Amino acid sequence: MAAAGDPYQLTPRAVGALLPALAATGHDPGPLWLAAASAALHFRREAAHRRDVVAALSALAALRHAPAPAVVSDLLARLQGSRENVSRLRGAELVELLAALKRMRYRPSRTFLRLLMEAAVEKLPRMTAAQLAALLRGLSWAGARPGAAWGREFVRRSWAVLPGAGPGALADLLHFALLLRLQPHPRWAHDCLALLRDAQRTALSQRRVAMRTRTAADEAAHTAAAGPDSLQQQQQQQQQQQLAQQPTPPEDSHQQHWRWPDDCDGSGSRDVPGAPPLLTPHQIALSAHALALLPQGGHVAASHRQFLCACIGALQPRAAQLPLRELSYLLYAVGRLRMEVPQGWLQEALEQVHLLTARGPVAGEPRMPQLQHRHQQQERQQQQQEQQHQQVVMGKQQQAPPPRQQRGRSRLAQAADEDAPAAEELAAAFSLMAHFSAAAEPQWVHGALEATAAVRHQLSDEALVHTLVGCAALELSTNPPPDRARAAAADPSGSASGGAGAAAALLRLMSARLASQAAARDMVRLSKVARLLQAHWQRGFPAWYHDLQEQARQALASCASDAASQPARRFVGRAPDTRGL
Image 1 (cartoon, rainbow, N blue to C red):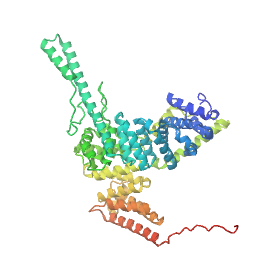
Image 2: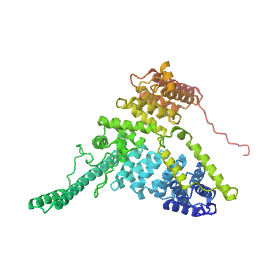
Image 3: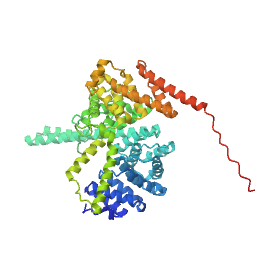
Image 4: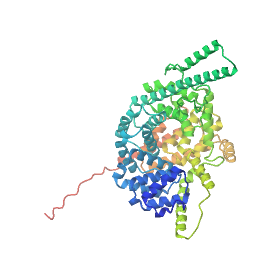
């Protein structure tokens, strides 16, 4: 702490320069010093330059220190107070700010996001493909809702940088453009997928050439070590070298030639010197999910479906080590596009989903309590750190910073907690488990349902409806028999009850939400829930699903009748006062 100086004596410009230097050099001044630095910047925020604020927030995020939400809110209000501050940020700084807020898990207000998107439109022509992809990624995480005009402008501006974009930027651009509902032109989506296909084709072609060259060199070295070569052996070696130097003819995109070489594992991580890398599992998952989000039956989906199906089939879910979100993307694409994948691949993917839903952020530790109380704990911790540092400065208390090993362990736990699946991801995983229940073990399906039910209060209405649709598709009963109920009480895992207890808890929550929405006359949410329930109804669904549909219809009809019975409000302007005339 002494090496970095007292942050309370530093100006905002000095804090904005010192924090990035600490992050770049990997120096860790400790949580107390970082809390004091963020407090000092917050105290002098009116004198802080916009670039100092962005640089400080980015450095704090890189050092894995999240200031108190009130501190971040006031710093963003400083940028938001004057529209010129946000509009004069460079495109790279806008992307950097969004990335920092994401790492801090702070979601800005809709007003700030609107100002940021307005400022980003002017910078689009000067932004690279990677920056454009990072911009969409940050806006998607922040919950932004770009308008149709903004989406058209983004697609038009980004079209020019597609040919020079790498596979990672192409996959992100395509995926997040569809996730944000920018409604890109079908030709734009086709160009993104075609460039990804060409990158995979080039990588495979050059990889084969490099492997042939390496094999020919190994054989030549082995023959030279065995003794003098005959004329016939020398001629054979020359023919092999000439064959290796010939380029591989381009492959037809409509044929099943898209598979990894034999010496490459299912994760696509094997490098061959002199050859570009293959598409990573992350890029394949995003591209496949984007293709599944496109309108089915069109030219784009038909022309690229076989290519991505072969890429997915070549992956090994266990070796790829994908997070739950991206593994769900692959399964969603397989089901939505009706891809024919091996049965072993499907079972391995579902087993990985089961392991990811049952495992906490740290091995052996439960995840649900941390997800429920994480934000409250972070805020209390930040307040305690600021109070302790103020006492140190005032001379009331002397406390040494925690050892480096303890800080390292706490940040490893924080990184693992950041990678923990969210409630929406757990709901999507259970829906996929229910869809592919024929290939999944019963305990896998029930485990995903129990994990989703544990965080049911964090689910949106849409995710809750999809979870109940999965329960109805599995024909789960919400009233288990007495013997099964007693077995469920003795078995906390819920596997003995066949998921009936979890389904009943989800159903009670949905009924309570419908009642509260009806009492609040929230016709928007009621109509959305009613439409979702009706759209996913299938023959053979249990009786409780029909009762839930009827409850939603009655609540919506009651709100509509109340709105119609109320007299229309008439606004009459006040007559001008003419007494003084």
